[in-house]
Length: 456
Image 1 (tube, rainbow, N blue to C red):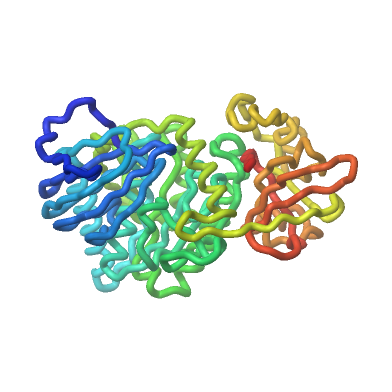
Image 2: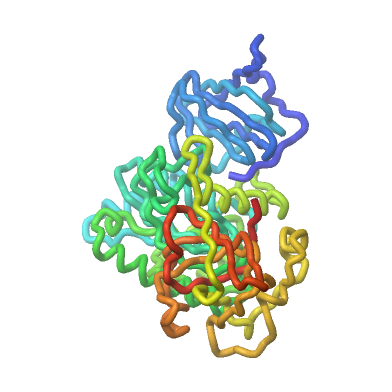
């Protein structure tokens, strides 16, 4: 949950400063402690008494959790005591929480799952930017897991890094708890993990904003929907639980896209967070064909600025290759001749990108027009990229399951095999240096280049 941080809190009586650097926080029942930690800060938290959870995942007592670059909240049903040590930008206790609404929604979904002959609910969560959609998706997934369910968590917001790097759309069976320190946790593509690794199906859209190339975005969600529904048919645990679909900010102008998502994922329940007008319009549009639920926006939600989001995205890319402090990885670098690289980009016929969109590109001196090109290919989903440093240097590329010699339509339909970074490019010698997560030769596969760049 994204939270606001007042300068003064009337609940400071619940915060006790110890003689050491540690501080004890007493949280009353059905309240939450909201905190913010900058990327250059480190905060250690331990539950010393009672029970507590973060976004639905229960925290073990007397186990230290480390947070950096995070805005979150810890909720308690019956009251608890926390001990924290380190740096924190802001923190306060709030009794005004929407957790009661979230719990009631979970219980309603669980009732549908337990009803004989009833199909498990596929839930679509809609709302404006920074309304708490992703928080709700994580809480509903965590609560379902605690009931011995296995939900399919679908992320359709390419700006989020859900079990993959930014620019991706994912459908992930949830069979183990989330990694509260890392936000989501690692996948089987990232090497060994402390928790059971998640196994997402990944599509690479390659942009932060869905309107940058809406045609390619729609193609990706349609293909992801087919894959997710197919998994439900063969996995009884997931079929009995259903899907929870998180979305980018969608409103009244996106009604057609919302209808496409409802169709692609066979949605039976729509949850609208903090947008009464959208709720009413959708109720008229679907006219009783599915269930609609309205959830109020949490009072603690605040806007996440672009700088903070970019740091989250860069951290996700770095952790894909280098791991975390608890599970470090050793990536591999290979030099490859240009002739062995076959890269594509989303076709530029319906692309409109603001040149100042990504500050990290400007800092690298990267020419954004090399990616977007001119409007010459309106009918195609993707188009080939010329191998040169202007197009490839520092690019994050998705290595697809499609072979390099496959037709463009086959490549456009392919899911992601893995990711790499073009860490160097020499136009004179015609070779690129590629950063891979594991040792070995570069797969003989087609690649998709988006707008994301990464340097070490």
